[in-house]
Length: 356
Image: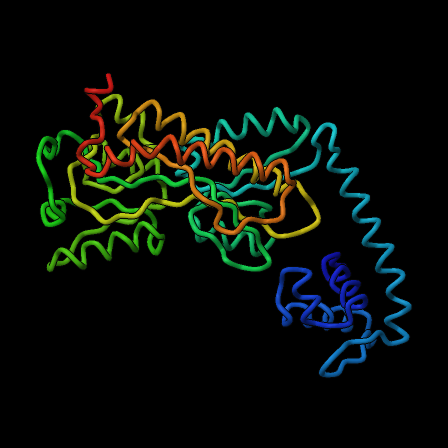
């Protein structure tokens, strides 16, 4: 039996209106109708008398209401016990894109382990497209990815933004010169997975600037992308924030390219529900992402490797956590203003040699 369906039944019984119930549960009237229809089919009874203005309980519905309230209350009690707020017990299933895995995700896991020492964690690393599918199918509880869902059943919390830059191996001989897209098109282009945001932006850039067909090699693994480009296979647009080691070691360099690439947004998304754990982990992710942006920005100055982002659609979170996130965002924005001015030209990003 789906607890969420019983919660919908209880709220419809209280409000007696499909629209008001949908607004209360942050979903659609169609979803409310579908959940009620599923319950009626399961119990083979009619639970509501419906008309154009209201929905009132039938005799069978009134009998079921008392049981539904008891089941939902018991479920809430079970969640509180399983969560174990003193020790942070339970299970959280997190989906994460590789751009985050290669930057601040390990630090986030350390914070989660410190805050919830008894929490069991399952991590799935995949593309944003696949992670979104897993979240909608309830196969994961929280995803850290690159695209706000914009769905009333889910909360979207912006984490930070990664500026995107053209990079290549120094062995290609592109350093120390201004390079246009036509010149880059002479090399194999290494891209994020097909139909991802960066891949679509890449196709749009070349369609605007280059007449002939361009070889774009789509790769779902960010680690494989970095390795291929560092080995001189081709050129790519990557966030400098995730290739700090390669930049320091000189196996990759930021190219001087006039490009209209927008920063890569990072977003935490989870289903709006009673269980607070995904929201709490999302808040920790926002704090860690903003701390990463501040630290990396202060270390590299004008390179602008990361910047904190505003909230795309703020979910209902505890006031203290929301206040902390707001304060961190404001601090990050103030500290990165000079860096953004110095980084107006990508060629001014510090080279690996200068950083050493």
